[in-house]
Image 1 (cartoon, chains in turn brown, blue):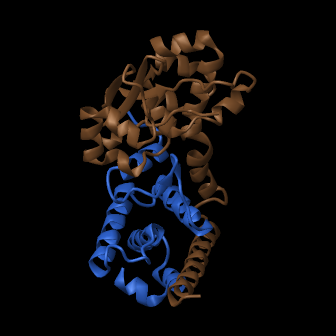
Image 2 (cartoon, rainbow over the protein chains, first blue to last red):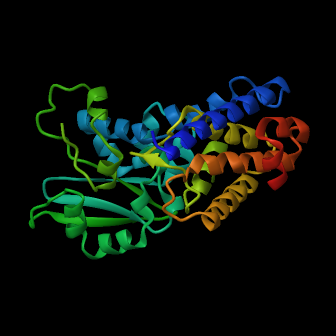
Image 3 (cartoon, chains in turn brown, red):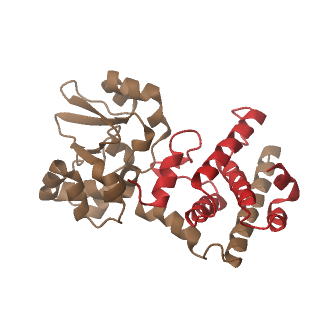
Length: 204
Length: 114
């Protein structure tokens, strides 16, 4: 065991004790309730996150009528699903989905990170706000996608969409082959945030 | 239009280096206490005990201070230790908890620095 590691273990135990003591004190004093912290966490862990986008995608894969409505009026279609309030409001009203097909691949970029539709896609990855990524994604999307492991035939058109305060794009990926027997819930589990940004494809 | 505090709080952190660690779209915690500390800061600000912006500024200050005092590749870097430091700072300033009680928890030296 290295000295650094020992130091680190002691530090974690110390921080754990501090946070526990703080929360206990605040609850004892009646400043917060016993479930206040869990409630704040549940917002991120169960209400808002990439699992919402995955649900939308899976529904579109199994329900052609929903998919049509989603493509023509994204917000109205999302409102059909049973999401917590807030998603279709604060962010969802600006959401627009674009569909990947055998002929077209979509990629989304963002010029301001505050525009990222994280209640649907989850929190943005580190590289997403890198100006180099954005500039290259617009200039040479095929090369950028290849670096992400998405190697597309020359015949496939690539469309790059820039999210803004007005429109937050996300991608409806192609349903992978061989998933006919999967349920909607099983399909949703295959969908990653990166697939909904267009920098990955969904695989079964 | 932003109607939900948690939404506003998370969005305000996404701009820069004060953004929390994340993996595959989700918050990413290395230890259980980090998750509690994250939720605690949100819960307190949501209840109105301090403005989220005060916390965000304290977090940025704490990160800057660490960066001045350490090499950028120092492996002892921990985002949530900066988070906890910022939380202690805003709690001490807010008068939410008696300074003596807070000092007993976090240690008198650290409080003096805050």
